[in-house]
Image (cartoon, rainbow, N blue to C red; front, side):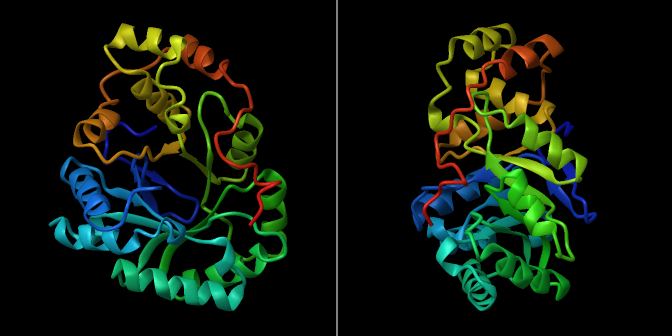
Length: 276
């Protein structure tokens, strides 16, 4: 488990990735996303997660260049969207993302959703980008176990990450166990259930003991479960608050109490029924 904001997790290919970062889903391109990313980097964040679908890669790239932090200290993730999948389209989508980001290499490239009939060809393109040194690591997002098993059947590079919806109402324990058994790191998107858990009574009560918010309790629970987490915010005070989770530890009983809130309830789509 990471011990501070810039601490890193070693992925299955030896690349080290910060265990805590900033997500920028639904953050408007231009000044809004630029300021959020620059604020996060100023306060010690080193991992930024975007996607072609977010339509804010340009602003993220500008923020990186204006941050004053060396490129090799930052870890940048983007994703290939559904209508960009397939071998040739993925290769072009990567070039488009790199042009918008203004980067010479990418730290992590993910398949955004498992588009039936396409994701294996998408992965073949990503393997090529990885072997050519354009990307330091490749992984997936929103993949169930059966998607992962199918992907790895015949592939030459194992995904380093499966980024999925993960929070106390969707603990994904079976998937988490499977990923651990295959040395695939689980990463949480929407760790706060899009704000739907910040007033939860159990989390609020646990927070009172430590002088922390429900959001901070959830993010700490992520880390103690060895899950990388990337909460989204554009407000400086919230960006600072989200990362202020390294000065306390949840007890084993509290960890179980939080996990018992599971309802297998999603705020987003189920990958098995997602309409690409």
